[in-house]
Structure formats: C-alpha cells, structure tokens
Image (cartoon, rainbow, N blue to C red; front, side):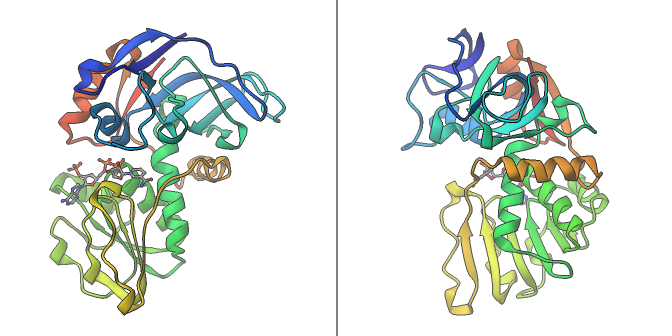
Amino acid sequence: MRAIQIDQFGTPDVLTLVEAPRPEPGPGEVLIRTIATSINPVDDKTREGAIGAGTPPLPMTLGWDLAGVVVDGGDSELRAGERVIAMSHQLSSGRGTWADLVALPTKAVAAAPQAVSLVEAATLPLPGLTAWQTLNWLAVSAGERLLIAGAAGAVGGLALQMARARGVEVDALVSRDTQVAFARDHGAGVVATDPDAFQDRSYDAVFDTFGAFLTETVKDGGRYASIATQAGPVPDLSSRGVRTTVNQVHEDGTGLSALTKLVDDGSLRLRVHSAYGLQDIRAAHQRFLQGNLSGKIAMTF
Ligand SMILES: NC(=O)c1ccc[n+]([C@@H]2O[C@H](COP(=O)([O-])OP(=O)(O)OC[C@H]3O[C@@H](n4cnc5c(N)ncnc54)[C@H](OP(=O)(O)O)[C@@H]3O)[C@@H](O)[C@H]2O)c1
C-alpha cells in the first residue's frame, strides 16, 4: 500500500510516497481504507523536526486526520463499507493516517457525517476534537461570555460554531480583516484584529489557539485554556482564582460521534480551502506553508 513517509526531518521535499507494508489490525482495532485526510500544523512541525522529544522514530508515516471506509471492523459493530472518521494521535502511537490502509483502535473511530463528502469530513477530526475537548474543559454554558483568540483558524473556527450551538456569547480575535466576515457570519459578536478591542476581565472563559495570552480579558474566577503547546504554559492566574490549562487533544470516538451529529444537524460547517492528490503532497505542504488560508488543505487518495 502507499504511504507518505519521512526518513529525515526538513522541508516539504523530505515527504516521500513509498510502498509500505499493509497494517494488520490487532484485537480491538479496525482496518480503514483512507479516502481523504488533511494537513494540520502538527504535521508541519513533525516534518521539520520541531517537536523534539517524543517524536516517533524515523522513518515514520505522518498524519492525524482520517476519513474513509471500513475494510475490517474486527469485533466492533462497524461493518465493511461503512463511512467513518478517525483521529490518530500520530505523535504518541507512530500510526500516521497518510496511508492507503490504517489500523486504529475502534474507540478512536466514529461514523462519518452523512451531510458532507469524505473530503470535507477529513478536515474535522483533529481540529474538531481539539475544539470539542477544550470547550468541555472550559465548561462554557449558554449565556456565558467566551473570547476565542484565532477564531478563524481551523480549531478556532470550529470552536466558535460549537460554542454558538451551546448558546454561548462569543467574541473573536482574528488576524486579518478578511477573517472578520467569517467570524461574524458564524455568530461572533465583537470581532477584532486588535487584542486591545476586548474589555478587561469581562470573559467567563478564554480559548486561546495561538498563544496570545490575553490573560487580562478573563474575569476573576474564570477559565483560560490555550492549545498552543509550543508557546509554553499559560501564566499562573491562581491569585485571581482563574483556572488555566494547555489542553492536549486525545483520541476520542465518542467526541467524534458528537461532532458528526453537529455537522449533520447543520451546526458545524466545514471548510476545504483546496484538495490535492497524494502524489502532490509536496505542493500541498508548500501551499499550507504560504498561509492566508480560508479553510483546510485536504489530500485525497
Ligand atoms: N494542544 C493540542 O492538542 C493541539 C491540537 C490542535 C492544534 N494545536 C495547535 O494549535 C494551533 C492552532 O491550530 P489550528 O489548526 O487552528 O491552526 P490554524 O488553522 O493555522 O489557526 C491558527 C489561527 O490563529 C491565527 N493567528 C495566528 N497569530 C495570530 C495573531 N497574532 N493574531 C490573531 N490571530 C492570529 C491564524 O491567522 P493566520 O491564518 O493569519 O495565520 C489562524 O487563523 C497550532 O499551533 C497547532 O499546532 C494544538
């Protein structure tokens, strides 16, 4: 089967399409034929060698997102031919999804949304679970005020929509004027490119996707979650009674099932910036690196 692997760290030129052995699913695992996947910032950092300790050994297959079709459901209720989505924690397991066939724990897999194509669905797992699990940590509820920093990014854009579906009042820090319309269209109230636009100590919770550390905006007794691992810890706000975390996404089929429902009931709209065939993996990464994206870069098999 085909797989995208690296055997050294570096520019997108180290990405290579290789023939790799077919994975054999073990107990409690399901074998999936990949139809589409997408590129996330972590894939870029892994390829560059920027992750450091904890990176799987070389050569490795990259990729976290997966949308595909069940080949062998093992002892699960999943049947061959069923459309599924999954997130593989590639850094901890070494199991990359950029391969024709991927064996994953059944509990990391969920039915794919019916309302969208598998190419669109492939943009959901990693950013969607990150948004879902972080909103759950923040425990924001209807009527509360949430500030999202990076609200037009992959994670931030999904978090904005999920929070609005929960009845949360969301304000949005975005990076560029072209992102303002996206945030407004998806239900944000105050939308700004200037961090000073947000009132001090007025938010019940802050969801920080890029290490903005807008710690003055959170109310005393509030919650502050960053997902920007490489920006380091959130400053200690315990003297103000603010709980803080740098949240780490984990495999979660139950969470994916909840996301599938949100897509199918129209609460979550997915954004594909462009799709590339597997043989164009280097061009896909070059485009990813150029930035100024209005959605995810998908790859099709
Ligand atoms: N901890 C975890 O488990 C976990 C899970 C998933 C992702 N992450 C990390 O979370 C980060 C976001 O991931 P993502 O997939 O959402 O990336 P993304 O799609 O690139 O989104 C990041 C967003 O933040 C915006 N931004 C960056 N700097 C900004 C600034 N100074 N002011 C305003 N907006 C700014 C970007 O704007 P531009 O488009 O203009 O650059 C972009 O819209 C990445 O570093 C990723 O590695 C962590």
